[in-house]
Image (cartoon, rainbow, N blue to C red; front, side, top):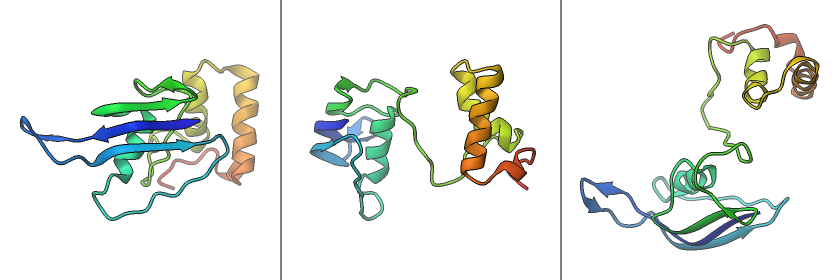
Length: 133
């Protein structure tokens, strides 16, 4: 499902390339697979996730999702950030609906899907609250 094919990633300070954060990484994660990436600060864990999300591009090599090269963010992949990334001006209901809305969902299908997800997460009683509450 996700393939890293001889991926290198390095960053620059000015015009000078810093040592690679990732070097010749080759890894395949099958659909339904589960991996855990452990390491000290600065070892490339976030870089790895940013490559899969399409937020950054590899310096060399390819990152593939279902056999297609990743060239940027897309609706077929998502990232759950460590810190809350909710819209503080939107209610819980509106935050849950946001992703569906930008994909064109409206009316009853939107309402039904949001309701199901709020129930699944035990947030039905909090649907009209704002994240800070």
